[in-house]
Structures are given as structure tokens and as C-alpha cells.
Amino acid sequence: MARIVGGIATSHVPAAAGAIAREQTDDPYWKPFFDAYPPARAWLAEVQPDLAIVLYNDHGLNFFLDTLPTFAVGAAPAYHNADEGWGIPVIPPFKGDPNVSWHLIERLIDEEFDLATCQEMVVDHGFTVPMQLLWPDHSHAGVSCVPVCVNALRHPLPSPRRCFKLGRALGRAVASYPDDRKVVVIGTGGLSHQLDGARAGFINPEFDRLCLDKIVDDPDDLLDLSIHDLVRLAGAQGVEFILWLAMRGALSGRVTRRHVAYHVPASNTAAGLLVLDHDP
Ligand code: DHB
Ligand code: FE
Image 1: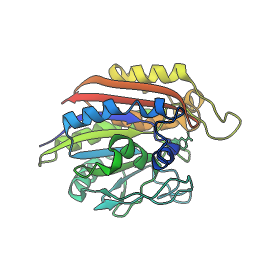
Image 2 (image 1 turned 120 degrees about the vertical axis):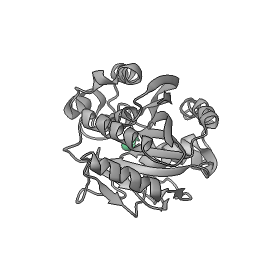
Image 3 (image 1 turned 180 degrees about the vertical axis):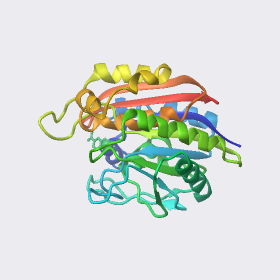
């Protein structure tokens, strides 16, 4: 039987991939950001997942404004990245698990999530940066991936509650997979940031701290927020917190916080990291 061993939420700042490529992770600017990750890696070494479901938002690499599904699930044997224009390198591909992908897709569509299904899918920094942070030097070889892409780019976006429910349905889908898998669910993006417009540079530590707290023990308290509440409180790109809520939704058993970190700023972003144990 497959079971979810835990969840991780992390920012996906593309400049971090540039810092890794240029070996600047110990530079004074980047060190406090990268110092957050060794405890998450130690936890992964402890729980030994063999599958990662990565809930992320594409920023225009695989989907663009012309065709933008609300929810899309990868069912490819491998996932490549590509030059996105951030100056971050193309890296070796990530291994897929099409059997698990199709099981999840079938269960989610049964539960009335009308998905786009992608037998080919390139993954952008929303996927690759967290994978690089959690499994440096491509050490993810033993871990297969299922990318689950949620639109956080072009309005209308799915609500916090809808994303949490997507996570709940994913959790049930994992629990009904007949073969053994130890699954970690990863949600990427956030915390508060805004990259453009009159409020470019907006960061809201007070709201971020509230989210880091509530999402562990009281996520229901965050589900009445509208997307426009999130834009106001977390910034236009801080809406990526819906991916954290989707991750949290997948953990329906007993949840224990194992690690938390918060650092401002990493590039334009209030960078957050949260590691949660899950006892189904
Ligand atoms: C930045 C953050 C993001 O989430 C993103 O997708 C792109 C850039 C930043 O802080 O620079
Ligand atoms: Fe982003």
C-alpha cells in the first residue's frame, strides 16, 4: 500500500538555482537561505520516500496565457526543464512513475477534479528549485516524481479551499494505490512576494508567520480566505500559498512539525520552509 510519510512546503526562488550553479551558496547573501535546508534533507534521509508528489505552479514554460489549465497532472516517464530566461541552467531530468500518475489521475477525475493530463511536460523553477534544494547534486535518483501543476498565474485562480480539497483527494488517491510507495508531498511557492506593479517588493512577515503557524495545526482557519484576500495580504505572487494549502490538504492524519524556517529576503521573496511528519 502507498502511504504519505510527510509533507514539505518551500519557496521556489529561481535565483537560488543560479546561486547553486555559481557555487555561491556560502556567500553572505545566500548562506542564511541555504542554511534552512540541511534539516529537511536529514528528515528525508530518515523517512526515505520513494515518490514525490510535487504541487507547484508553472510560470509560462509548459503552459502559457493562451492555454492555461487550472489543474494539470504529469504522466510522463521523465520530466525535463528548459531555459526559462532566469539564467538558470538546464539540469538532468527527473524520473516519472506513469503508473502512479495514472492512478492519481483516475481517482482525482472520479472525485470531480477535471484535470489536464500531460504525457509530456517540461517543469520550470517551481518544480526544479525545490528538488535541487531538497536533493542537491541530483541525489533524487531513487525518488520518482508526479508533478501536479496548479494555475497561480492567470486569474481566475482556484480558491484556497479548492486547493486544500485537491490535496484531500490526492491523499485518498495515494491511500488507494495498491503497491508499496512511501510518498512525500511537496508544495512550492510563496511566501509573500510581489514581482511587479505598484506594490513590487511587497512582503508581509506578519501574515507569513500566521500562515506558517496556522497551516500546521489549524489549516481550516485559512480556507475562508479568497484569492483576492491572498493577493492583498501576501502580494500578487504570494498567492502561491495555495500550493502550500494543497500540500497540507493531502495530510489528513496526525501532523507534527519537524522543521520550520523563514528568511527575508531571498531575491524578492519572503522564503519559507516547513517540514511535516504525517501519521496516516
Ligand atoms: C521570484 C519568486 C518566485 O516565486 C518566482 O516564481 C520568480 C521569482 C523572486 O523572488 O525573484
Ligand atoms: Fe513563483
